[in-house]
Length: 417
Image (cartoon, rainbow, N blue to C red; front, side):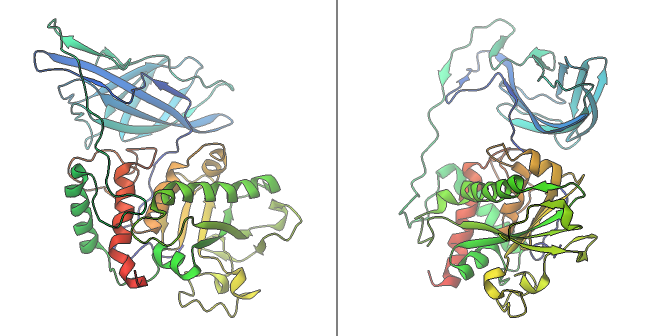
């Protein structure tokens, strides 16, 4: 794995995929807030199993404080019904007695202010094949059903929050005009980018798609002893295209962005043993036995990371067989990593997520490929939950989209736009 983008730290992250199993107390497009006549309590929980295998699973839990007072510390409780056991948790401390699980905030997120959300995850074990979601949750003793209640008895006045301000920038829009509530945090993010990155670097994902005319070719590093079928091979290619679309559909036609779609192709696979790749056609190049970083490596002669000048003269088959990024799938890995070289995460996690509409860890790491930063040490003003803030959102948000646009706004002049 080559270095991540220049002058930025790369860490393994436990961002989790959105393979929704249950949503408890789901909110609507408009929600109810209370006047200051009385304190209110209320919460909602989104519980998602993000990966499952024989005897175990991963889950992500998002907790929203619908009340008007902070909870410090917060404590979420639920009961399992199918014999599940919590093994280890991140972004919380989780304990279990019998069927009852209690999760309390970690030092960095123990304060849950009003109208905010905290996210944590855990690995669990299964005693059978059933893995039902909990039927009910309690946050600091109050039921989480998506409703709010006055404390102690004053009747609240219900008011409906006005719709979120619509951005005026969009398709066919050249003016930089994000929603007013995003102007300050976007400016903060870009100031941080300028302090963190060498913007003369020439292998951002933007540089790659401009060099190829709007395509990205992948080579899969199958860092696993599990076999992979033809069907799974093709499903991985289709899923990569779908995930790219989630990031770039909103870029089409915006501020001279030249591509309606980024076309994604898988052109190669690397594995420990040819027998692990259960297909016989010649649709992709196959690399066997070239071990680098203790993992199968696609041909360096064909990789953009190794030949950023675009010279693929030593690549078997020439430039048409080159790859721009690697998808490095490592058996048993948790979390992920990403940079100009591509993205890395657990092999089981990625394959088990092929039926999900979005693969959260991959989407987060792909953001890094296009320059978007991590937010371990600070949070932009007014923003709590977005996919680049690992573990805080399972989906790409409006703030994520505007951060991507902001990168194009600042880099497009290097391509003559």
